[in-house]
Structures are given as structure tokens and as C-alpha cells.
Amino acid sequence: MEVTQNLSLLHLILQASVPVKFVLGILLAASSMSWWHIFLKLFALKRAMADTESFEKEFWGGAELNVLFQRVSENREEAGEIERIFEAGFREFLKLRRQAGASVNVIMDGTRRAMRAAFQREMDGLESHLSFLATVGSVSPYVGLFGTVWGIMLAFQSLASVAQATLAQVAPGIAEALIATAMGLFAAIPAVVAYNRYTHDIDRLSIRMESFMEEFSNILQRQATKPA
Image 1 (spheres, rainbow, N blue to C red):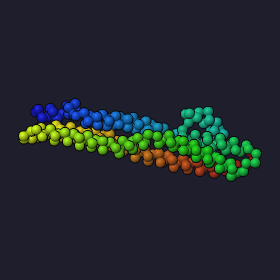
Image 2 (image 1 turned 180 degrees about the vertical axis):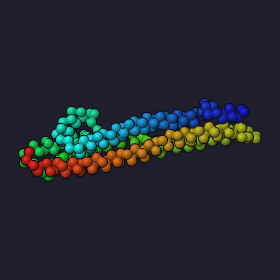
Image 3 (image 1 turned 30 degrees about the vertical axis):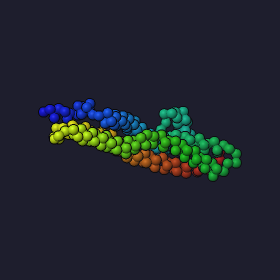
Image 4 (image 1 turned 90 degrees about the horizontal axis):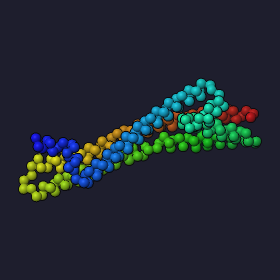
């Protein structure tokens, strides 16, 4: 009964050595931050997906480009990623088209560059903090393993002065050490799953945005051949 009490999770953490407690503190902080970023990125990607769906439906539903441009320009901070790409491209298109002597190639090259720059800015925003999740997912198991190795080493060192070792004497030290491994996995697994899922979702959004940019460029190229 005494052994069971000593092997309770809270007791093992409180009685752990300072290095193991330090490792557990690092892993707890990493896990808390990763969960924070997981939920923030979840909401951000859901919003990006919904905004993309809504704008594409409106765009391909026959809405006037000038009306869309005016709406997005007036509410740029609340606009979605694909809307800001559209706004950047159409703004550059209108500016270049007003320039006297600008050829269709010059107009379209400038428009594509503007959309590509906006696309890169939006992708940077969508991919923010993914590297942190990847780092937590890859490093946390090794940090936990370090705590485990240290705890097991101390457990065996404590047996040096004991004439006859028993399971009751070594079990608390081994259990304390394994908590670090469990904590490392607890921090790593959600981060890895979230990283893989969000990378997949961002790749899908990237493909949709690039497809929109190509199709929008074709529409603008047809307009560029018309008189201003």
C-alpha cells in the first residue's frame, strides 16, 4: 500500500529531482504554447477556407470586378487572403492600364507580380507558427528522454549504498524518470498531428489561390486588349 501511494503521479512529480522537474517544466510550457498555436491556427484556417469559398462563389457568380474591387478596398483589414490577392492584382492592373503607351505584356507582367507578392505575404501569414509546432513535435521526445535518462541514472546511483535492492526501492525512481518520456510524447504528438494537418490545408489553399491568380490573369488579359 505504501508503494502504491509513493507511485502516485503527483507524488512522483513533487519528489522528482531538480533536473527532471526542469525538464517537465520545459515540456509543459512547450505543450501549452503548442496547444495555443494549434487552436489559433485552426480558427485562422477555417476562416481562410470560408472566405475563399465565399469570394470564389461571388467572383464566378458574375459580380462586377469594379464593384468587388471597391468593396475589398474599403474593407481590406477584414478581407480574406484571396480577396487581398484580387485587390492587389486589380489595383496594379488599373494603374498600369491608365499609363499611356503601356503594352499588354507590360500591364500583365506588373499585374502578375503584384498578385504574386500579395500571395507570398498571405502564405507567410498562413504558415506562421508552423515551424514552432514542427520543433515541438521533433524535439520534445528527446527532451523527455533526457529527463528519463537522468532520472534512471539517479535511481541506480541511490542503490549504491543499499546492500540488497528491492522493487520498492527502485520503482519510484524509474517511474519518476518515465514521466519525463510520457510528458515528451504528450507534447510532441498533438504538435506533429496538427503540423501535418495544417500543412495539408495550407497546401490546398495555396493551390486554389494560384489557380485563381491564373484564371484572373486570363480575364484581365482579355480586358487589357480593349480600349481604356
